[in-house]
Figure 1: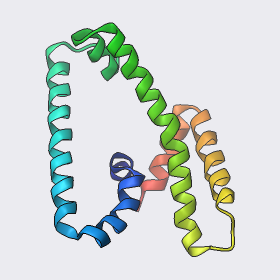
Figure 2: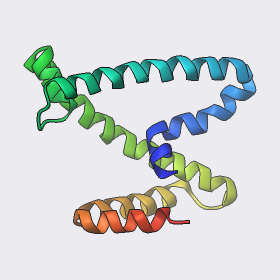
Figure 3: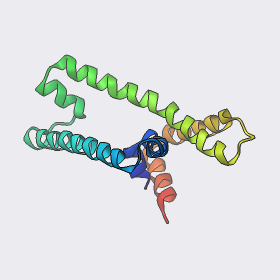
Length: 139
């Protein structure tokens, strides 16, 4: 479930409620199907490039190899900025969700609490992060 939530994104989960209320289920399913198809095409293309010419770099390495080195450089920085923006966005969404049940507490309490936990987990070595992730996902 954590992998699905991480792949789908917090904005989709939170934004689905208002989109469902305003537009109904049909436009929501059509939009999800169209975007799912586009993502599928991109992932198949990335898989084809990886099977044709594998290398040790991330997907920005494919952009450098197949398009231009400047494009690969920009892709790598866009990927970095994506995660710099997504972390505060997810922390704010988490605070908003918890604030539904505890409206008397300020949202910044939850942002700081979960932010410190996430940073503390990521500062540790990979073995510890894997152990904690597996413990959190067990039924």
